[in-house]
Length: 93
Image (cartoon, rainbow, N blue to C red; front, top):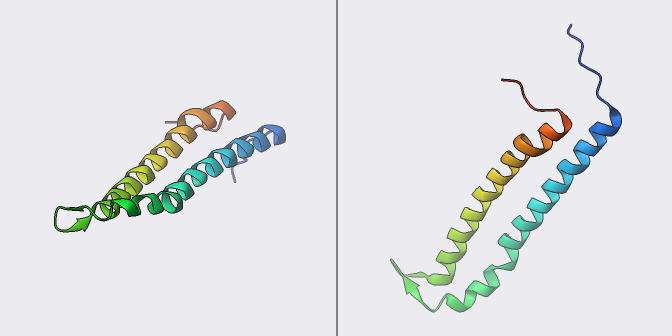
């Protein structure tokens, strides 16, 4: 059985603290996009576009999906290129 290298407890705690800070920040953005902007889009629902979809609905759905994909990329890039490297947990290639 291969032994795992000992990890400094303080470094590990700092890593997880920064990791959770990133997660909570991205979750706050997710919450705002999901629940706070749709009421503002209701005023645009009187305008119809494309096949009769209300403009507010269309903008909300496109905006939300775009932000969700951007959040995924931000998480992946931040973890791989910033946090993991900072604490020495990057994957070897």
